[in-house]
Image (cartoon, rainbow, N blue to C red; front, side, top):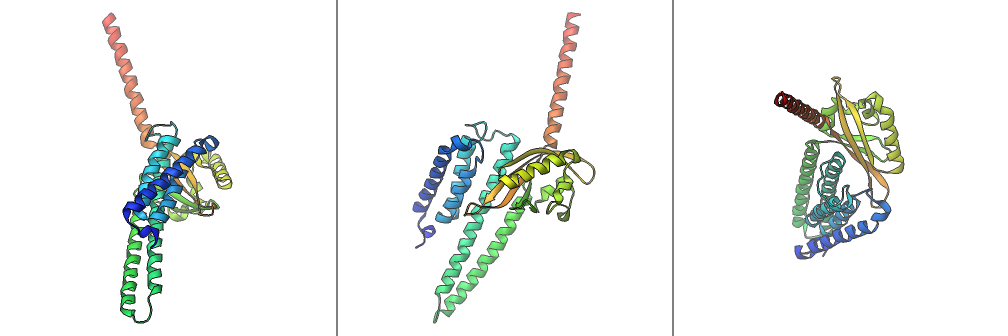
Length: 289
């Protein structure tokens, strides 16, 4: 019996143990890598636990190791959900990627299991074979539905999400990106996304992106993005390399957080504080008079 088909009382403790080992290893190498790749251990543990133990245990591993990584390896340490832009962007990116990885591995295993059972049938089991074929078709329908649901989740994310291949060429963007920039897919894919960057920020942005593609180091940058209607949005961009089982970079995934509302709130707060100070000074003058 494959391990992922064993009882929950076995699979879930094993998955938690995988997560604990991953966190221990990440802690052990912390003096070497510091705050770089804070969620690396969480993603590796999710990958291993999902492949070994199945969807449910793998998702539990994602949640527990994500919280542990946020507590132990993000600045400032020993806090949860500090709320600054880099941590929020990294958290959203990690959860989305981890959940997507858990779903893809589980669905691929379901399809492989169906194919294995189908291949085992022969001879007088034609009726059972037909039922299995029908079940596989149902799984494929569910897989298509799951893909649509995942695509909907990405498109409803509160931040823009972009993907790129190993060469740094943009391969997809979610609806939030098109909302921020007002551009089409043709004006985004490949290297066309650079046209949305403010001209004064373009050189630095492209230089940092080339550095990330060449070194596979995380990408962090605060930049201005222009909408086709002429408005400009300050954003915080973050990206990270995605590695395959052999350790080679296969793609990049990044988030772009619009800081416009945040800056507007800060401006309003400063205005209120200034007004209160003027009111205090006026009251003080009246009292002395």
